[in-house]
Structures are given as C-alpha cells and as structure tokens.
Length: 418
Image (cartoon, rainbow, N blue to C red; front, side, top):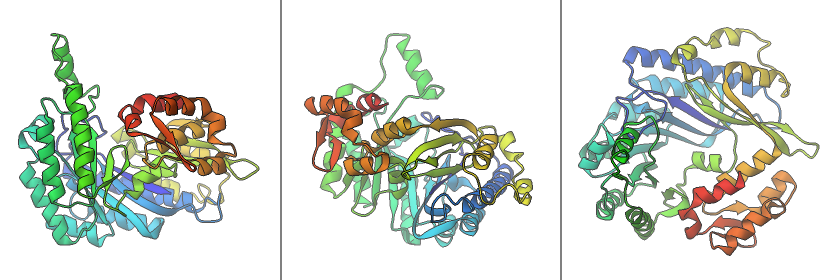
C-alpha cells in the first residue's frame, strides 16, 4: 500500500492553484499535525489487522507528503509525522519517501530534519526559471531563492530531487521555456516533471481568461507555441539523459517516481489528512481476482476534521481486529469518509487502461489478463483497432501504448476507455 499525507497549508495561493490549501498560523498547523498523527495511528491499526492477503496490508511501499506546502510546517512537525508512520505502519527498507517543498520555505535545519527522519526524495516546485513568469504565476519565490534551496538540499545529502516545471503560460515563448530547461538540466536533478498550465475554475487565472474572453480577446498561449514547447521539452531532456516514462514525467535511469508509478499501475493507496483521496480493493472472486474496490475522500472541512475522535476510536477494541471486509471495514470507511465511490470489475478494467496508457511503456497485456481473466482486446478491441489505424496507438507482443501522436491528444483518447 502507498500512503499519501496531505498538508493543506501554504503562504498564499498561486494564481493557477485549485488545490485544497490555504494560509494558517503556526498554532493551527501544530493542531492539524496532532490530529493527522492520530489518524495515521488509527488507520495503521485498522489496516494492520486486515488479513485479506497472506502479507500484512500495512506494508508501505511509498510515502508522499504533499500539499499545499509541507515545507512551511514548523521545525519538528514533519519528524513527528514520520515517527508516527514508522511506529504504526510496516515500512519497507527500500521505501521511497517524498516531500514537496516550495523554494524559500526550507532551511538547513528543516532539510536535516527531513533527512534524519527517513525522507529520501525532495520535490521542488520551481515552475519557471524566469522571475517575471514566476510573478505572473503568483509564486512566492525567485529563481535565485530556488537555487539556494536546491543547493542546500544537495549539501544536506539528498540524491533524489525532482523539479516541477510549468509550460503554456500567458505570453510564454518557446525561447523562454528553453532557457528554463537549460538552467534546470545544468543542475542535474534526478527527475523533472513538466506540466502544461490548466486553467481551473475558481482561480484568479480563470477570472483573468473569462474577463478577456468577454471582450473577444484570447489570452491563452497559441496552440502552435504550445506544440513547439512540447516538442522542445522532449528533445532537450532526452539530450541530457532524461527518459520520458510518463506523459509529463522524465527521469534519469532508476529515478522514476515509485509513488506516482503506483497510482498509474493500480496499486492501492490510502490518503490521510484533509481532503485526501484513497483507493482500496475490497473483494475477490472465487479465482482470487479483485472484482470490487472503493475510492473515498476525507472531509474538506477543517473544523470537522479537527473534531474527529480518533483517540476515542482507538480505545474501542471492537473498532479493529479481524475485520470482515464486507461489513466492519466498509462501515468504518463509510462513516469516516466522504464521496465513497464503489467500483466494479468493469470500472477497474477502465481505470487499468486509463492510468496504464499514461505510462510510456503502456498496457501490459499479460498483466491485464492475469488481473481480470480476460484479454484486453476482448474488452477494448474495437477502440484499440481504431486508434492503431489512426496512428495514435501502437502494439507489440507484450504491450499496447500511445504513440507520440497519441500522447499529443491523450485526454481525448483516454475518454474512449471510460
């Protein structure tokens, strides 16, 4: 199982951000971490006594501490979270533990705390090496402050660092993004994520676009420029030894993000903290294959979250123990969580395709057969045939994958598998 830990705090919201995050004082942050640790303990007990498989279900394969901005938490609180995870969950020796950091919010003391508590991967949200673009995005840092944070992380000893980049900004040119790429690859990070800007409703960017569209003005980046940036990113990162392993992610050999690969390959994950989402298998058929799962989400109401009585729940010995997967476990989830979605076998096959095609290696035909006891082309043969004919998909003996042409319009193609 993978663990996602949500920290819903930031210094201020960026102009493009629709994530669940907001500013908060130190007292509020400490109160939240205390409740979060109670939740980590509670679900550690719950899943530790959940004998669906021969192996303990609380064996953690990866941990991702995201946000918001986890690196704004007061000194010592991240170590408290990590201590709680290690105490109540079985953590593999080779576990990947990532934390998202905003440049300008880390110090040598914080980075040392992360390292000594077991965190072994840092993800810096740079977005752009152009200070004017950073201002437009509403970022709290300059490129120079990012460099200082990056160099501190290297000095502390972090050997697995990701840098997030964002393209498709208003008035951005291929030349300006090339300059960002060149500056970033010169630092030789192990991993680079390059995402296109998405205008989300409820953000300042959305209001900005709508205001101009009412006047008949399109302020979005030209489609031609966006394609040029996309092609440039692939070319430059390949030149410097970064292999593209997912639509928006590039890595040096051996540094692919295990946590994200788990999402795309259908591994179970438990999200803890405000608004965090989870995906858990709940039922097997007679052949031992999973045919049902549930996806659920934690409350987004901070006051409701802080009132949760995890401490009281832990004193009730009947709350956990040998759990009947069809009753007690689901009752616990449904009573504590929001937006519970039941997934049947057809849903699981659809998700296998949608997430699997995001990975450049593609869909493993044998894995699909093993998981669902039916061939992938028996279920999706017509769709696969259609997109192979148009050059958007390709197939070999073992895999079905998107071509470069298919990746360009991947969202459109993936919708056909819903």
